[in-house]
Length: 270
Image (cartoon, rainbow, N blue to C red; front, side, top):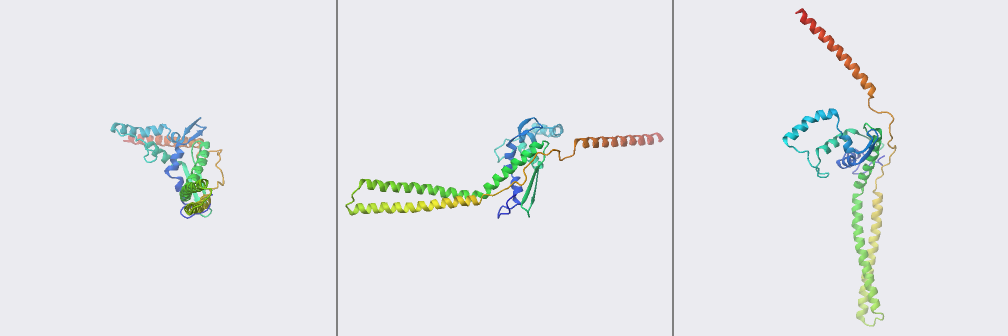
């Protein structure tokens, strides 16, 4: 549950935030336990693991780059992406499914991998990253205001304590004020202390107001249904794939055999 539409950050924006490079790179750098692999791997290594078909398809391209002396690229943080990072981002985008309902304010997030435990872990981690990112965006102005007021408050507190110390030191040196100049000096110190006390109290009130504003701006993302490990794969089963391949192979074999007979018959008549 996205908590309803808000000005400047509506329900339509949440899938876009979830698809940002910052969140996806963080997800790719995280480490997950993958029971089907029998190991704990960074998601980047899992999505980029080589397959026989991928190796055959990408081998010529890789050899051509080596012959031309084209480097794979060096990562410069999040500003410059390497080719593996770009490939991983694209693959991760293909694994993610997001749907939203503008009327109810609900968003559904799904992940499709070969391991059900990994899929559930990716959904849970993605929701946490989304909540953190939305919180940062929504509360940035309030945080900046609070930081500014806190800085001024610390300065006002130091000045207030200093004014107290100066007045106390003056009273300690002059227990019996007899001259007009000493009375005038003490009045100035007292006025300075009163001014700094008033300023200090005002800023303390501003700090409390800024803290309340920060709490009010905190977004609320409620998880209606937590991710669970599915019992059966959502994709086609291997048994159906094997049977379909056998049937297709049989049909193609029969078709080729009939075609060869027809071609052979025509050649014999000629």
